[in-house]
Length: 175
Image 1: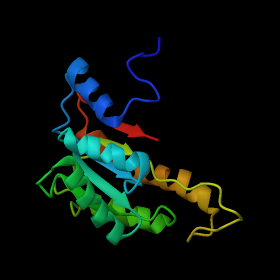
Image 2: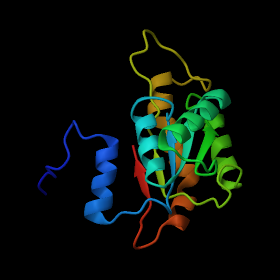
Image 3: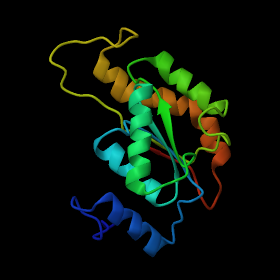
Image 4: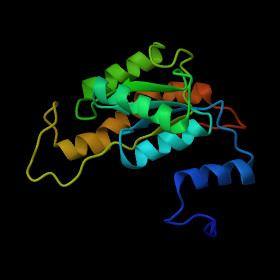
């Protein structure tokens, strides 16, 4: 398969979204997307671009203050007035209990009332800790945050991903 030359390391999230809309006729208005680590970097930029594209975005951060601040910043940057289109989510990837609690709240309709879920973007991560640092579960933090949390989140929410999928619009997991 040949590389798509319309994209490069310099392609912004906005440009990628526009390309998806114009060349593939992609409409994001009916999508619900959970993004972990949405408070900065790629996670934040993806949240803004997807919100501008009309998707419902759940900005998942490790605590309530960060999650609410991030959702507010994304709404402002995306010029989104509807608070239900950019929703804060709280999940500390350093705690498997926190991942389970987030998944349970999502499945119960406490985060997105419809429980629809089309895409999970496992973006949260940490790296280069100076010394061994255990997570709340006693697991090495980098492994717990970068791998186990995302795996457990998908494992817990895969029934919703399957239920929200259709032949025309399959669900996605981005790691």
